[in-house]
Length: 132
Image (cartoon, rainbow, N blue to C red):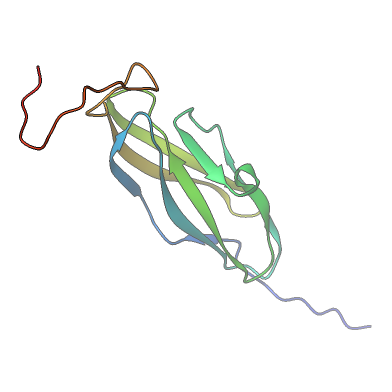
């Protein structure tokens, strides 16, 4: 009878240690790619948990399984609700490696033009005319 064992570390490497989305209009969203790599030989379940309303992770709502040595891209989406500075944390939990915090920064800004109606009626005018 022979017992054989192989030790493996239990980690998930992230392509980015922090994400900065910069300025984003409150009527839009911005996505950034984040690459997860399972450095273990064991499969690991992962999930982005306790997401604030202004963050989303896709595909599969930020949940999945990484096989040993597998790499997967997810998209972190920033969608500000108001025109304020955002300083958030993205929480990644895995079944083997525990919990990782990814700092997130972004600035919500108001759009420069807001239309109150979906149809605009304009007076006709020739090139160079001034219409008041």
